[in-house]
Image (tube, rainbow, N blue to C red; front, top):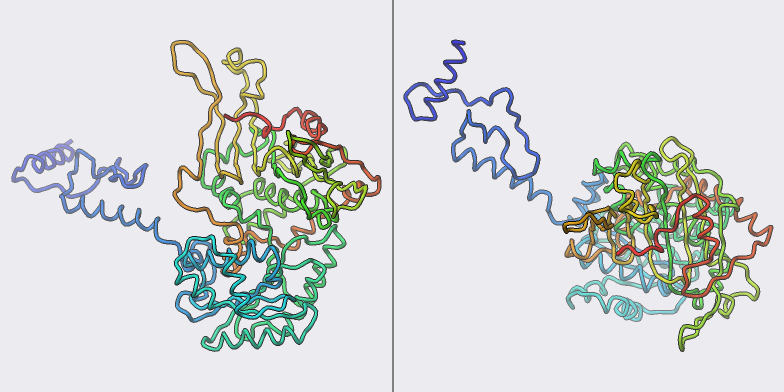
Length: 581
């Protein structure tokens, strides 16, 4: 007790200004230097047994302020590379240059998406300091005519005249045939002229062209226009074949001229902001991980709907259908990201390894768990909405599906028995893309009598709306204020527009930037596509062999009735058809 009494006397004397020797500045053993929220003082500084000087308090506040400020540093190419452990190409120092060639530069995709995305990146300071944009297509255009085309593509974007003028000055055009080696040699000469001022010249070719000429362009570009002073990458647009065999053939042909690390297979849905946030939501929030399994989740719905038809694109669409065009790639990729286990790191290969595991564990999709539909014409007031077969570009009597819903299952311990309902369609009542996670009913619910007989309407649900009006919200049950006991279902809502005062980047901006930085997380690896086709090819072959007739549904409706029976088969209902308000 003598030691304890002496310590109390020393502390008391110091606090009262006495002359006894001051106690050493040491935290008691039970004090922990930690804080439950950023910016707060550590617990030791609030201890009654130890009072810091004003200078020490100021130093602590300064340290926390610096940490806070470091989290809000402006985005640049350098810190994007640092965040994902990518190789720093020294873009901002001007030691490397980027030549970005849009093959098919006069096409719709280039004009509507690719060229605006490149300008948006430049406008935000996310393009390398030394960059040049090249257009290549069969159209006979001069440099000035191409710049005029680019100017029209970016005319509606907010930017200064000086920025627009500089960007246009970095645009060049080379007309040529896709299968002509000599035209690519001329393109290479033009690119080399613009790269002479730097030691390292890197090149990206974006193949905005039909899939049947992928191989010819890959062959000629790799032979005649590959960079001799840096790396060469090629972005390839879907479709990646029509089935397993056609994909393997396409992959083999590309491998004759390119290595896998040079090929960036793009799925623009993986570049959406909410898809990028999907892994953050799950792996950076402790509250979700214990719930992300069969014990608590009743069903997962991945939904894609458009409120317009083919409208002149029927010739292209009829060769593929909605399963090949949307479900087998967009929705399946989203499902794999949603259901995967936590990767070892943010490295692209670690993430894609986990996605492949999900697809390998997925059961074969059966025709019994699939519903097909095709929209028909209808009249809405004075407006007549044409059916799919009324599109002049669609072959007469076509049975190609414009709507499909299917139930798939992942045969692993986390998801065993949970139905993943994938639904996609054209000419429906709304335009939306979202993930809906329906949780199980509360066992032994105390408020069952207050919730009504339809418990499905009051079940907790997590909604991740990809587009439009990007949002994340959780449906919960809540007592209505007042003296009585009434329960209502409400939303804990994160609406991106209301929370973040920033324009969300277009998916093509994100994916092009990732390709520039060599970040392959959101691009599709060959083995992913092969497994995905293996799961759907038998279904597609059975549909074609049996000539399955799609169920007709009116233009602007909620889709065919069979989709509701499919959901009811697994004792769930389509949540996107309910009123969330």
